[in-house]
Every structure is written in structure tokens, then in C-alpha cells.
Image (cartoon, rainbow, N blue to C red; front, side, top):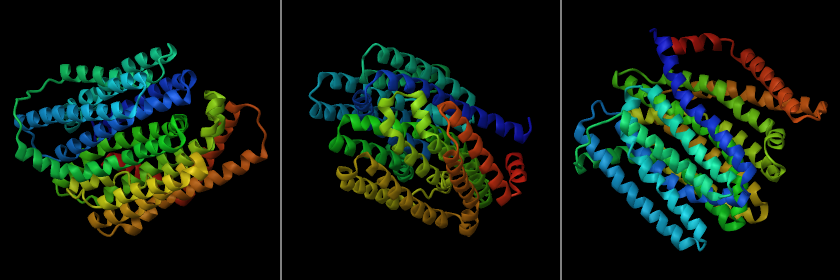
Length: 474
């Protein structure tokens, strides 16, 4: 099989897994939007927020530290597996203790008990996933994840339609984790000696912790936003925010995790072979932005007819939030490959303080403005965070990759200018015509936006087709 065919095959299975999950999540999300109230959806999201944060934190430590190793021994496997099981179980117990102190409602506590099971169930398979990613067995990973998602979604939808409210949200995640874990432990069996090498574990923790903080920084901001909204506006407002944010976060997370799942080992392998990362990084960023930026800007353009057609009118208060989050997310994708470069170079500490500062600053803006602005304050907070993160990431990139500042800005400029042209042109065209059908309005909007974007981009950069061929052939 040629290099081009091999790469495209691996990329297919990486993206099949993530976008397959998106498709299934959209189906379950449609059901939840129909059968759950904003308050019920908000409660389910609130219960999963803290436990998902801990899960992301532990996963990022393991991924960032172990994916870069040239060799992993059975003792290393045993250490990782048993430590993850112990630590995740303790964190799950502590989280439920917090729920017990905060909630008086028995329903919320029972749903919280189901939610915390997600953490240890999900954590114990991370070692197996690392090995599969190192072997580039993306097809096996995709099958395992999709199968678990189908089972979890089935349970969640049944509970939602049966009137179990927040139980549907937490049960879907926990059942998915359980089925996926059982599937992977059975078909990808590994020797797991009952041993904990604390010295080796400490070394990996030191390497993985900075990268984990960066990876969980967005999670920290998202979960922190949920808790601030809960404190000031109540659980129903959490539901409206999560509804809008999830419509953006589902594709964003799928794209980023797919790219990281492929890019981490690729950048690490190039670094281990002594190859320069600058050219590959610039071209990867340029080609990814070519596809990704217009997707999110386009989502913002069709936000209102999309919600009117697919969801009930009870979710209309989320339209402005959805459009704003989508546009800001598009501009937040400039540095999507920077984590892979930092992991490969073993320099994950760069930008760490700035990332944390950006989340604290954004949450402060949210807390100070939410009383006066309501949910719109979320957009001001997110804009603050995106602007700060861009500056921080540019600094971190400059520390690791040599003399690429101007080239990087140029690589990002093509997609940015084409997206701005797409936005302005589509808005003008849609104001000139009147359509009484939401599907027709979305169709015309997508056609005009796509045509404008492609024409603008090609006029700005006529070499893009040959660059894409070169990128996938080498």
C-alpha cells in the first residue's frame, strides 16, 4: 500500500470514530431536546461536568507522557493500569461526596451515583488505547467506541422517552464507558502485573502534568462556566447554554481529538527521527484550517433556521449563544497542532501559566457581567479567553519552532480572510431574499457560503491544490 493510501486509510478510521460519535450524539441530542426540559438537561450536564473533568485530566497525563516513549514494558503497563484504577476510584468517591453535600434532592443524588461510576470505568482502558494508538490500530479503536456509543445511546434515549429526566444523560455516558471498556479489555488483552513503580510513575507524571493542564484548561473553563451559570441563573440556564455549546462542541471535540490521536504519534515519530517539524506543522495547520474554519462560521450562519427546524421553540433563546460560540471557536482553531509539537519536543510547560490565566480571566469576566447581561455574558467571557489564548499560544509556538512567525500568520490568513468574505457575502445575500422554508433557507445559505469561500480562498492561494497533494503523499 502506498504512503498516500496508508495515511488516508488511517485518517479515515480516526475520523470515522469521532464523526460516527457525532452522528450518534446528534441523534440522542435531538431526543433529549424533545423529551427533556432545560432544567433536566442542565442537571444531567451539571452532574457529569466534574467527573468528566477528572477523566480528561487523567487521560491527558497518560497520553502526553506515554505516547512519546520508545518502549513500554509490562511493568510500565501494570503501574499505569493500577494507579489509574486507584486514583480514579478515589476521585469518583470524593466527587459523590460533594454531590451529597450540595444536593438535597434524592433524584439528583441517585443520578450523581450513576455519573461518578463513569470515571473508574473509563480510566482503566486508557493504557490499552495508548498501545493501539502507538500501533496506529485506528480501525479497532473506532469499532470499540462506536459499539459502546450505540449501547449507551440506546439506554439514554429509552430513559428520556420514559420520563427519567437527568438519568438519561448520565446513564448514556456510563453505559457507553462500560460497554467500550468490556469490549476493549476482552479483545485487546494485555499482561498487567500487580506492581506499581512509583519512581517511573513520578517521571511520567512530571512529563504529562503540564500537558494535562493545557488539555484540561478548556475543560476547566467549560465546566467553570457551567458552575457560574448555575450559581447566578439556575439549572434551566445551564440547559440553554449547554444546548448551544454542545452543538458547537460536538464537532469541535471530534475534530480536535481525531487530529490529536493522529498527530501526537506522527509528530513524535518525526522528532525521534531527527526531522524538522516546522514545515510539517505549517502545512498541517494550513490544510486543517482550510476545512475547519468555514464549518464553524457556516454553523453560525444557519443557527436560527437550524434550531427552528430540528428543535422545538423552547430552545430559541440559545440562537445568539450558538452563533457567537461557533464564530469564536473558528478563530480558536489556529493552534490545533501546537499540543502535538510540544509533546513531541517534551516542552509541554510552555504557555501553561498563560493558559490557566486565560481561563481565570474569562471566568472572572463571566461572573462580573452575568447579572447584567444574562447568558450573553458567556460570549464576552469566551471572546476574552480566545484572544488571550491566541497570544499565549503564539508565544509558546515561537519558543519551540524557529522563525515561523510570519509564515504561520500567512498560513492562517488565507482561511481567515476567506471566512470573513463568506460571512459578509452570505449575510448580504440572505437579506436580499425572503424564504419561508427553513430547509430552503439553510440550503441557499450553505450554497452561497461554500461558493464564496472556495472562490475567495483559491484567488488568495492558487497553490493550495498542489500543497494538499504534497502533504498526503510524503
